[in-house]
Length: 329
Image 1 (cartoon, one colour):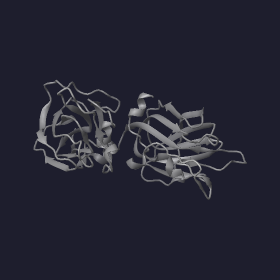
Image 2 (image 1 turned 90 degrees about the horizontal axis):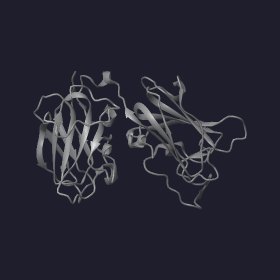
Image 3 (image 1 turned 90 degrees about the vertical axis):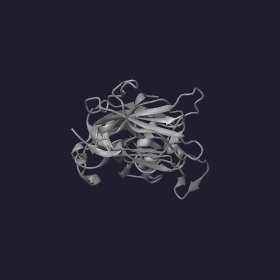
């Protein structure tokens, strides 16, 4: 597994992604490409168009050309890798695929998109397999186009990368400084046994435990934690710690500390400030939490913050962490 798969999936439907166009979806709908979770399959399940597949499948081409689908990223950013998954497509997968990307301002219609660049060259695919392609293009993109040659079925398309929002839109507003969609990201974490820590920064409400962050049960007397690089240096007004859906495995307590590293967090930094650095200062003291509850705390501290450390005691899971505030220079 490539390291880029640990980064958020910028195209995921639950992150706001949408398959806005496809030239063909005769056998299976294009929307399945960006569904969360692995593709499912029930053999000998036939509908009016044949075997039902949890994926995108086009007709058998009898003319020259190839098929394609365009995805608007739910969170625009720098793409670090693409996964083309042909799960369950064994006799009907495309033998080749490529991926293009473009950056568009505003809210264009699919036919108005231009400036496409190739980020994954035409590459061979196998049936019922996961194909990972690293991407080195440093530009910010808003849309990707999956091309399959000449036709066939793809179960899932994953577009992993670093979120890069439009900073001009965020400045001067009260925004969630920790949100993935605003450029926040987890730089370090003590444990991610059950699920990714970046889940706590995801858009929307967690629908179940799997859409949050959950650690293993600790037996060493310590506690679990994660460090969030904020969307930029800012002042945090409110801390929201949500244990929704976690009824028997929520942490008993939580605390927050902050630090100002003197520079804006970089999307490819990947490094957290040292946990024993004396520059860390308290934002929220160790506070009791309740299961399946949205906790909101006003933070009366106007110090500039670039990173926040969340400690949970001793272990457990959280649905979401929200840190509304304002960006400052």
